Image (tube, rainbow, N blue to C red; front, side, top):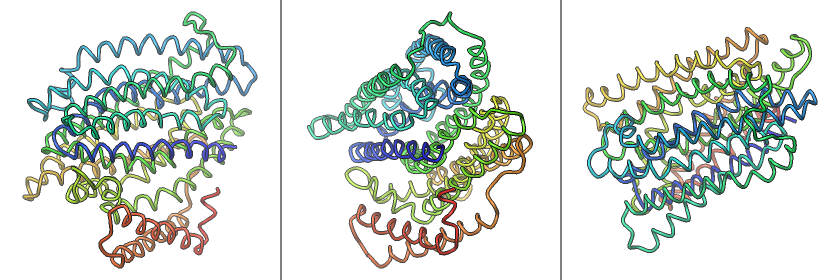
Length: 512
């Protein structure tokens, strides 16, 4: 059941991410990686704090385990009261936060993107004020996701961001093809398109939510004891997301100090590096969380159930994410050129995105597997342990990022944009530290669980050998259009990996 759910989540995420890449390509085509692109990247990242703090991650950690357990126990009326109470509380909280965000936009830009100056800074402030209310709607969309996931309705909630992307793409194409709009005006169209897309993403889920949750009561005062559990767990979950966001915003601050184009380069690279994390880490973790949360019986039975789900999920993550990390390291510029090159985005820009992707490959496996370990702790209603470990990761990533990304290029006489790659690599090192801490905590609760060493070695070997074939194909096909070059190279790489992994007996991990 969970593996089928993971496929539905992955299908929804793949669809939304593909449209996300189209959005990023359209943005790159019309805005390139200059100052306006920096302003837009910063403007999305700043109010995105709201979505990440109060949205999917926090609600999944606090709401789904309680709500799914009530459903598993047949207590549907109480589940509906919890759902309605949480929606009422969340809407009240988000309204206040959005208002503060709009008013405090100049201060937020000054703190979180201090490297922006003059017109670029002023444009960022205006963009933040436009985008903020839309991201408040996305937090309410995360509530819909929690309801749908608990009822095993996975596809709609993860495919709904397609509407958000389509609205922005439409705004860009409408403004860009007219030919008379400046880049700053295009950025404003993108901001308004994001607000429309946020509204569409929320309302497309509501009919299904209302149909499957007929017992919902939209009253904060109708809270039952389980609402208190959700609220108590929500605090540490928000704190966990908060410290993660501190890391993201440290990255934003550092990138804003690395010169024009660095922020945009970081954003373009993250659109690629987050694809495997979302497709395989998020999909598997999201599908497994309701299943693990609904495990009933004595302590030993629950531990055995969690252990089985973790072993299966970790093997599937390894099978798909290991080759993703190798592809980012070996073929990163091909990926960047295929997705973005054209218009204002040049081959040199693609090379800098590759630098960032190479750094991100360091922690890709650890960060993706860590999501599943954290989900196991959330299923056990433990939101405090992931918070402590996230806090450690953030401190380490910030120290490494500030110390190395800003200082090393200057010390070695390199272009400052090399700091973007150092920055993403520093985050990767910190992700490994968090991974080992999470794994240790889970093993203490449910027993030894992980991916067998022999399987890991086989998958890494298959991915490295497949990369050699991909690079050979790259050399043989010569100078093609970037899109064709990427299609040929990635097809050879992906096909080689699948065949080699199967020949080496590792194909069972895909179906674990």
